Amino acid sequence: MAGPLQGLKVVEMAGLGPAPFCAMMLADMGADVVRIERPSAASVTGAAGRFDVTARGRRVLALDLKNPSAIGAVLALVDRADVLIEGFRPGVMERLGLGPDVCMARRPSLVYGRMTGWGQTGPLARAAGHDINYIAISGALHAIGSQSAPPVPPLNYVGDFGGGAMMLAFGILCALHHARGGGAGQVVDAAMTDGAALLSAMMYGMHAAGAWSNRRGENMLDGGAHFYGCYACADGRHVSIGSIEPQFYAQLLERTGITDPAFAAQLDAAAWPALKVRLAEVFLTKTRDEWCALMEGSDVCFAPVLDWDEAPQHPHNLARQSFVTVDGVVQPAPAPRFSGTPPAPPRGTAAASADAAAIFSAWGIAPGMLQSLRNAGLAG
Image (tube, rainbow, N blue to C red; front, side, top):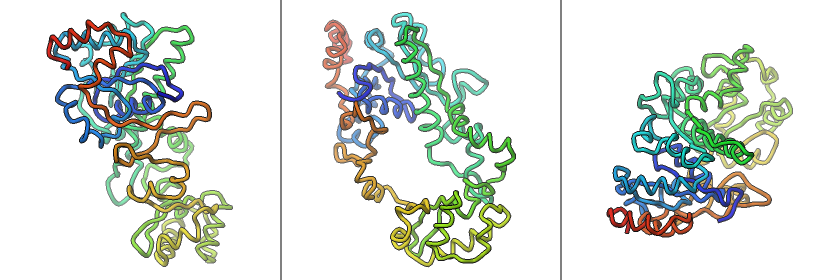
């Protein structure tokens, strides 16, 4: 392994969405992540599992956590781990005998990362939910979409991945810094409601200042401004523009050939709807590629809107190697970049059954533990 997190040992309790994405980020950066899977879930690893991109880079241990021998194996890993990640509802890990009190009594320096939607406390803590619900109560979902339709879910970027996984990864590394500076380990309670709210910090500040309306489609960054948004082209494809600063806006007008003095009132919000209609008509006069030839690489603040097949082939992404192919699957490369400790190319999803002996050996766990699992029919 290589990367800035080389030597870090992480136990991941397999789950859905943000917890696996967080573990993927740590594994991408060189951490040794052991993923504890249910035997039924682990059976899909290998050929089919190669499409589970967020499971890349880990070794997998298939364990039935209803069996005491399996719990013993997890605790043996915890004894040597720096981090544990779990994404279950509050109380599940405690009922398994793997709660933070048990684990941190054995490993006081352990950073215990907990990923939930609502958080470990609060009146909704034990309720079911998904990304859309968590970003709804944060205020973030309300701001996305047009005035004439309900709010539009931004896939699961804001809750699961931005407000969830990335906040958990940040919290884990903060807690590790504290522990390695002589402090104790601690629990990191990462809630997607908290994270999505934090991602909205700038908007809350602007709203308090009277510079951001509660109505969608009236604000500079939500599609209200004619100079910040996406436009259809003659071929049905789309382009994006973000010509906020006056000098960039001037370039937009120059390269679109617009000379109408009405466009001089760039920041007059009352004029935005009419100017947006006019600008949409201009973009419909050329294909997306023709607009790219006129604007891409300029200070217009312009980019074509690319689909999943086009994005990996864009010259900028090719030059930066922003995408990689692992086991035949095109996927985003690890990010960000490091000048001194670049990570190795990501490995695909591992097969579960083949990893037990290698994991225990690498983590310094006595052979008796593997034999105990074999006796219980939990390992090959």
